Length: 288
Image (cartoon, rainbow, N blue to C red; front, top):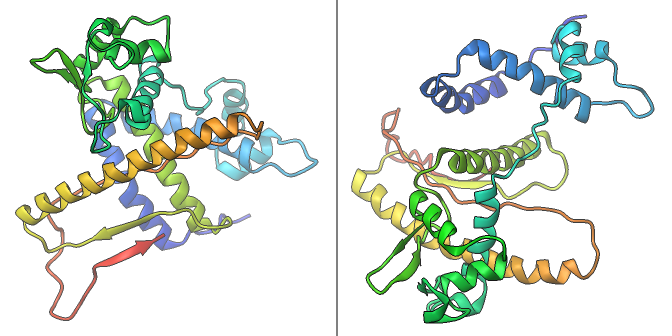
């Protein structure tokens, strides 16, 4: 049986998507051989989970046929527990709860709606202190331990008044590879999943749009980056506040739980093509 030829447009798209991933892998010592073995396991996992036939057992032979992975490898890989389910590092799990409260609860917001500068100790600010914030989320973790870790990651700083100031990026660690790798996987997975859903036409499209231009100066890019950062953070903080209220309501209603991600990104590099000719407007507001 001949193997169907994939659309050339999809192959070109995959090459472009994979380029920065391969660059990352080579920079961190992941070779083609290592990746190829990793991909075998993922192909088998996806085929087993997503491409079964109702009422029929998913056999090694069928998975081999679907994926192109040799049957003996399919048998070996199906016995391994290498799930792609998301594993949240403890520092990220606690940190996400703290930042959600700090940016979402009115008591912890300043008059402009941003995260309030919190006195470091409860004796200075009571519940409206960093120590009080940590205690409101977890009684088992000392605020000093959280503060030391966040200072290491660059999430907060302590000013001259002994107040803890949250970075306006709201828990995007500047350091800490494990934490950054978690958000890399979480955000990129959900963005690609939304785009793939839309490309496959699997129901109502998810929001997945961008604005792009290719003939701007570095100064103009800097101005647009500042606007995107400010307006993007305003949107995310508003979504966080609304989600906290809705989550509290939903927790009492007993509905099956669902998760969501809404993200913002901004990227720029030297344009790889000449500026468009006069009258040729290739800039657009796009939806996948």
